[in-house]
Image (cartoon, rainbow, N blue to C red; front, side):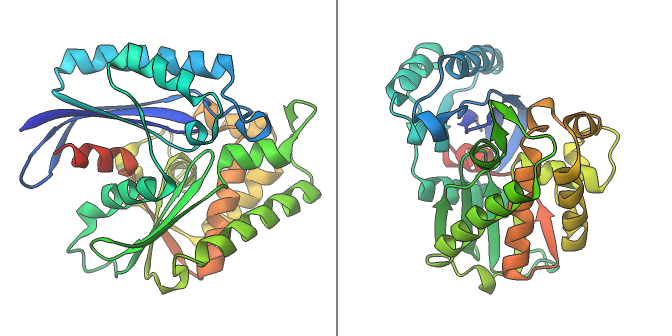
Length: 313
């Protein structure tokens, strides 16, 4: 067994997985998994640069993760950075900071690479299940981008598009430096139009309608599952491989887009860092389900982070 550490740094959050990996089978025995909301992509859509305070939040999380990695004695570490750092003019500053703290250079991967990791992480343990028909459509709704991947046991087609819960919130729901609470109908219409245009773009590469099973990843989707189950607290075990119907997703989305900050924050399973962006994330998921006509989404807690970990095996 090889002890590995995988870090996934996205637009909204940074996450760590430490696991024992079997080099022949690629099986992972999880030792530590954690997530920190750092909002690295704060303002990137508007300025094209990573904000100093966003970098400092991210570096603080990296210092915490460095201690955890050292404590577990991980032999291999891979740090993958996605949408926000891919878009930023000053990403070299980010790269230098991570290298100084963790001793590895972050790999600023392409959207296609991100999609492949997400697909591997989400579907590896679904193989052989009779109740989930192939091909799968894996959808990873991040902060700055959403990845679409169709495949059976391997990726057949993938596309990353620039719609995510943070990007859509900042682009359409922020007025005068504050998130509209709740958003107006005009703001929702504009956000939906952006999402639909992105789905048109994705469909040029990925045959969305050919998929038989929709697998949803990342915090927006897992939070919707927690809300649908009315969990008293965020519970990864209850969320992993849960199923949420399209009608329930629509009901939750409609409520989130009508609710106030205080009402969303009062949801017991809601992470504080998602309160202002969950409405946009829910609308992205609902728009995808409407587009492909699927009646449910299978929710996975295993995603790009697990794909990175398996790549080290």
